Length: 82
Image 1: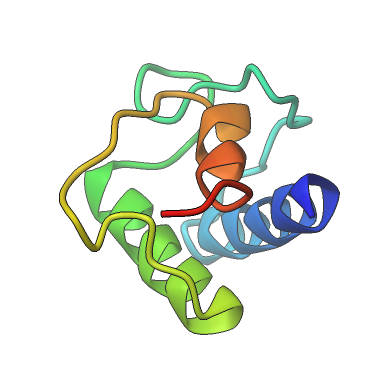
Image 2: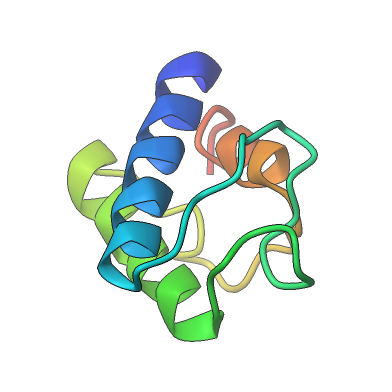
């Protein structure tokens, strides 16, 4: 499931970057969201989380915020029971 979640994250980040007129760099599991690796801001990240919830039917944040800083860490939140 991690690969499909990673692909979904990559797809949505590509859309977000394109909407902003930015190019999305190659993603790895270690790509960091808000400290310069990716051309997104906190609002874009919130949008990504809403889309992931809509498309997967999962909300790993239902019980409160869970820490993540990289694409891989976010993908992992969707592969473990919440």
